[in-house]
Length: 330
Image (tube, rainbow, N blue to C red; front, side):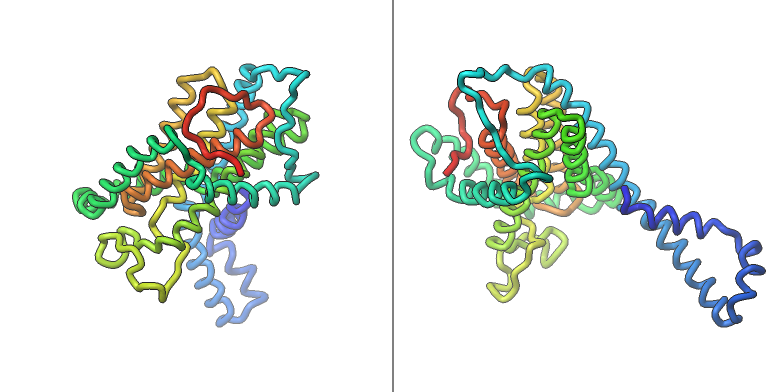
């Protein structure tokens, strides 16, 4: 929200009428200087109109809304948290943003090692889960270009989709997670603190993983080149972290959603809503002409698995359940 303060100040300044402003300023500026000043104010009005109507105001409002959602979920998590046996306590992560910052960086470093080496440790039935994912990804890659062509141009659809995807941006998720952590820290509420910390860790892991995959695949976005999403269109001459594959918004949304769902056991309909929002962000990245369907699919699965990995490795409230597909630690 503080990023919008210049917008507010500039807007208030631009509201001053020329009639009231000119007599006062003319005593201090020459005619040429005053003309330059008026031109600056006109440009400021245009800049404020653009900023307040688009990214700045929307990002601040969405960050506040997501923060309220995080804070509202924590009491539910505390009410439903399973009791931990004193005889076999689970320590959880010792990472804390204030007191043990270096531990947090070490955790993220270990997370990345576990994430990128996880496929090599899949055995037996766990490998079978990769079959439907691989088939779905292959089909999506095959029909990506046709799907984007079928969407066609739609300025309103693109604008609405891009507005909605702010829910999955760092502008909204990082402040929300940070606020949750701070509330838990100040109130000495371990559930609040852990939810905020694990969400931040999952976001960091998802961001690093996605950027590494973007560098490795170097795929064009739907609005660049011929619109077919070529991989390595310039061979190895150009590397970019703004590639299309996979979707960072999708990965971040599902990583956060997985942590929130794990931290709020016993609320099935709430979980449906949380995953619904994450799915909406992934779909909006496609309908907003920012990603191909395969990008959103792979990003969503990557984020979901990373969120589960972080929670299972770091949470003091985690109780192992029946075996399922998940990233195993180093």
